[in-house]
Amino acid sequence: MIEINVVCVGKIKEKYWNEAISEYSKRLSRYCKLSIIEVADEKTPDNAPEAIENQIKQKEGERILSKIPDNAHVIALAINGKKYTSEALSAHVNDLAVSGKSKISFVIGGSLGLHEDVLKRANEKLSFSDMTFPHQMMRVVLLEQIYRSYKILSGEPYHK
Image (cartoon, rainbow, N blue to C red; front, side):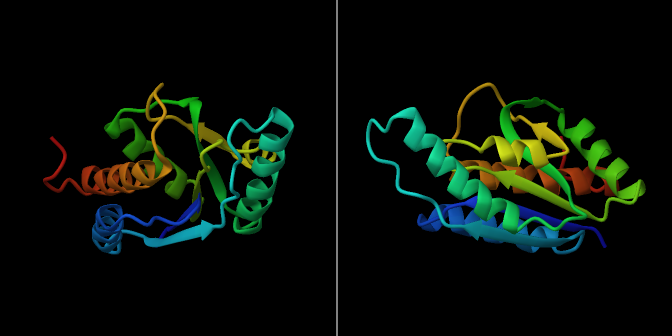
């Protein structure tokens, strides 16, 4: 069974996001071994200069990188990443598994995004939109799309 890790910055405090994450995690347990790994976020001062923002991203990036297995295929969520249809993402996840990539780590950055070291470690970048979304919402959207991918691959009803 393929292992999927979602490495993300920060904890989710809102009950409704946690309930959605829990629901998709439960649904995904039929298809993969899912782990959600949260790393601490750094407090960003208002109007922080670019140098401070980069230090914050670097600290968060070091925490992210420490949670990624050496043999993982890393997919970083980034606004400038590749966009897929649900069907194409499904096929891509399947292609990764068929080609022997049994560990996939999706990475979601904090409010400032991902440090360049994380982006360098990534095997690819994935974008869901040209818009910016809260990382809490992206966690739910990512899990839903992974679940949709497995439903498509299984030929099961869900995807419309």
